[in-house]
Image (cartoon, rainbow, N blue to C red):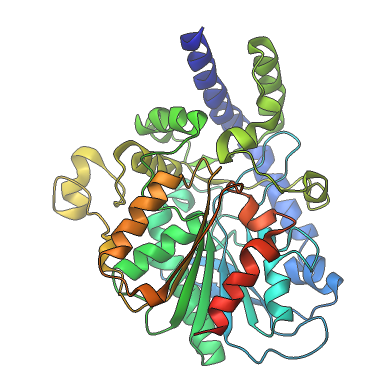
Length: 412
């Protein structure tokens, strides 16, 4: 029975990919239409409707991607920010069945202004900047490519770390003339850790708050994710020419429902199977926001994350026998977390029920940091009941995580 379930889970993942390929054309048209319909952007549709002033900005990365940024520099009271900028970087999330989970800047404003980090920071006097990563709804632009081009999706989190984050940080620094605090969730923590381990961006950052940190991934608790890692490591999907990975499709939903029903699997809450049992996410609230949004990522990025799960290493993309062409060595270079400057202020918060940012993996990261890091510059907050999404969407995250994080910022 275990083998049958495993084979069937592989089938589900394969269906996900196949359905995505079949719906690519219609998705592209829908995506383009959505972008046009919502041409006013996040400021008009989500921020200003809550009583905040908001500015739309764009930045072009060195490899040609056009990113959308939003700035909330005034609290709901109308008082202009009198504290440093804070740059918020979202993670890699997805949508399955009736659960709408965002992978752009909207994730920081899922709940009410009293519960959402983007609004809370603005009301506490910070100059808030929100980033939308390449390929997401508000950042589909490129200087020479479109999302219909396979080359558009030729990237992984390494490019996010090497291009997107530096471009965003530099833009905010030049625009405000101030060093900024940083806050990232999930993949948004990985891109920051990679830069810090190389001594980059230090002249523009005051500190970094890492929520559900992703670094070492050898102990990922989600069996579905582990199974997917084994599949993607084979590179079959990539070499079939499917460069864009769409985690949700109408056809996939129908087929997944049938398979789960046949196998008597609890796939109705597949988000929990991937992220862990989130204790405090108000699902009814989530449904209110852009219920038909579709967010892709690159297949190459999924393969790269799978490589991390398989090896437990934080390394560049493994091109196998082509590594010598890319890196002039047989194996991909690794990132050493022990090289993060010992005096750089870090706030790290993780949860005991998190299937992606597993407790054992976070402890490996903390052990890396403890080797050299100044204890007075490292704040660690552990919440036993929290899973992966609770850190950005829990109704009590303000009291549990955000208030301590803001106190950390204010004490620097």
